Figure (tube, rainbow, N blue to C red):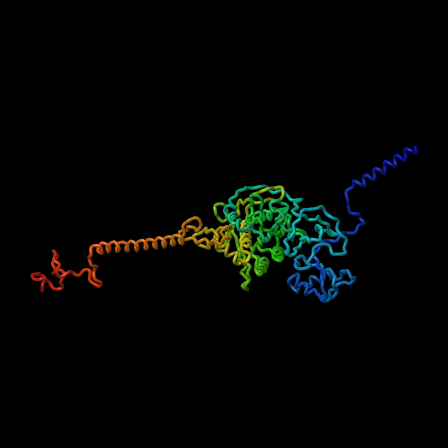
Length: 539
């Protein structure tokens, strides 16, 4: 009986131990809550103030109030707390708004808070040296971001995560867009290296092998924290594929460019103008050279227009779809070197795919049945929309900025419009602007002549300028040949006379004067001023 009891106790202990060992790890109810990841700055020098910090890291001294609200009353490492905006202690950690950028900005848990458990290793991208920090970007010393909070824990966003995303259907896969834009001939000189293109749309799936390590962490404005290199809709990923998709047969116009994904939508629902404006500001402050605005961006929206005006003051080329109505923002007019380039989409036949007021479209690019990259699990897909024409133009701009890094955004825009393939009877045309973008011509700087009155284009056909040049050359050659022949004939007439001993005509003699001793059948009276005798007309 005793033996039986001990056997039962032994079995029970074995079962309990096995259950404990095999149970999935979980958080103890008594365990302290993990601190969230935040942007923060550690005060480094005596005399720093909230106003000075706001001016340095937020670009606006008036945002000192935002810093005060985020940090007032929180106990600092020295036991004190912020109560006076003009008194900051060295070593204090200041929580920053999501759009803070500059030296000393860090992303992670505040020093001294409980560390989050290590997350599984995930391939990550890192910004190029010198790239400003952006919300969601990891520092070299920080672990994988886990923006959870005790009240509402959320899953940690990882690079290219597509969990919960519905797989998109694959469409047509025509190569017409890539061939029409003519990027390949430019790759011998530039492939987009050194240029960062911000894709402001639904994020970008950074796990796709065609991107390599060229997709930066970016920012997720949908949640306000986390990374932008994830995409559930696929629109941003397809845009990025047209800009910088690499591989053995690159789909992207600039396959060596870096992509900075700024995620403003995850469901296709309407996004406010204020949110879109914030996304543009994030892209600019993160150091993008070219900003490609995705689906739903209306440059005529006041908030968006204001953000674009800010971008133009930082030598950024903003590429956007031409508005369906209203007026685009005007250039700042203060000597800014940035530029806004308005794009229209066309189908394989060259017909405009959208409706825009006359005169707003500046260049066009393929936007119907365009082959690009889908999010993980969908492979290559066919897409249609204005944002894909925008992406192709942004890729061409990246090539120009890579080949000619000293050009301003205004000069890059001029290069793109000046070298576009003319499509109308005049340039700019009211519907297609300066014509179809030509990446190779833009990189080489080869100017395409304007279309003549007959509508013939300057690419692959005879233009008025070329014909005129040929005519001038032919006329000059014929004149030279005629002059040479005249000289040869004079020389031929002179040589026989010298060989026969004849004297040349004295200089100044009238070649039509008659010798007095000359007698021929011609009546001299016909050469005389006076009528001959017997002439019936004699007076």
